[in-house]
Image 1 (cartoon, rainbow, N blue to C red):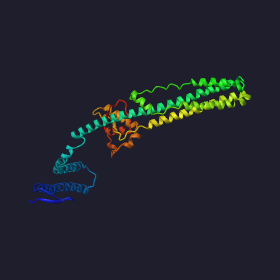
Image 2: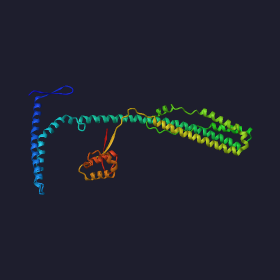
Image 3: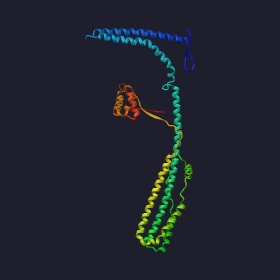
Image 4: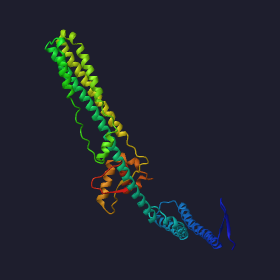
Length: 360
């Protein structure tokens, strides 16, 4: 027998002669099977015709049993022929089964190796991110402390100026005799020192790193602040002669002014701290971050009625949530495993049920 040549889109495909002969045998077998099935069909049709010719009410037990028997013979005779296709199908699937991702050992080892690499890479990135977060937190801490130092320094000296001024007003000290009070105020103000910064709770940064980072943050210019406050002192006492005539009103207004300035300073400090903290939180970025996906799913337990009852009870109690997640073609075929899968998709955890955690 000559070889058969089949033409595909790419090139001619030569089929061995023995395989062609096999196909011919299958074709002849198909014709033979069709004849057998047609014979069964004729017997059934004859049975149905005889029943139709005698429509009177009578027992049809024998005819029904015969119908079922012949149909069963149809199935058995068909299977004798189609079994060869099961064999052919299994043979065709040998290679794909060998490399099935669910069972292939080589792929499983690759996935384990890849997961280990992801874990190691993720740990490195997490360490880098943690140090970046601590660095940015330190910067915000230093800037906030500097702002707090400057605010407190200004308000302490302003309090001294307020006390000196209102004391002179209360005592009705003549305008030409207030210089002594001014000098005492300046002397007291010169002894004011910036507050001691609150410590930073470092975990990852070393002391040299802390110092290096802190040095990059500009410190408050206390000399400039001092000069500005001394100007405020001079300006305030420049109005002393006029204010002396309305002592009670001036004292009250001076207190109100100081409280107003204090409120503005406090609000400015709060705004600065909030901004610095927000910037610090948003300044950390890791490019191409490796993510490890963790999936938690219900552990299927076979031959345990208690497990089945718990799954079904949870499914029924969450029916409206889990039902849209069911993909079964017929609800009558819904299995307990599919119920468990739907509960997993909905993220519903069940007390008393074991779970399996997988990482990818």
